[in-house]
Amino acid sequence: MKRKYIYLILTLLWISSILYMSSKPAVESAAASSQIVDLILKWFGISSEYSESISFVVRKTAHFTEYFILSGLLTVTYSAFTNKKYNYSFILLMGVMTALSDEFLQGFIEGRSSEVRDVLIDFSGVAAFIVVFRVFIYNKIFSSMNY
Image 1 (cartoon, rainbow, N blue to C red):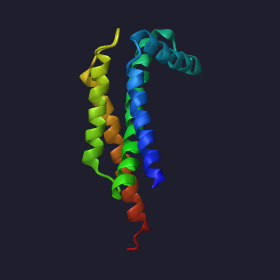
Image 2: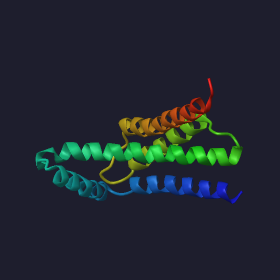
Image 3: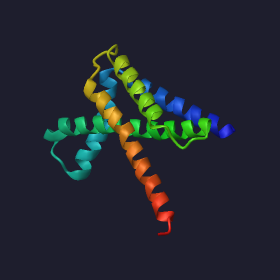
Image 4: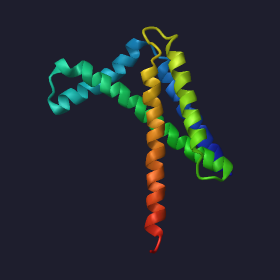
């Protein structure tokens, strides 16, 4: 019984961290991304002329990844509270609602903007988790069957 509340707290903390990161002004957000970009440029020996493109990929990958993780947390939390394995509609709805809230918030932050593209990337992270989860479940089921 305690486990379900731990899942709920983790999920709420993850959503809070997503919203917190979105509440940072563009300068702070760019500084965090540029540290990762600098590491990539150095590690792979890439010219700094590509830093803007790599920064774009890093930021969008971060969006995708944070929502992929959110989808996993939503899945275990839903399962813990309902005794059902999953509910794709619930997970997709919660993911898109979080993404919309995230982008709405960014519209009020200095130097940031709300972008439909980011909502789509966030949503694709949620959907990708569902696909991976479904494939894993099916593989587990079919590999245990005796033909």
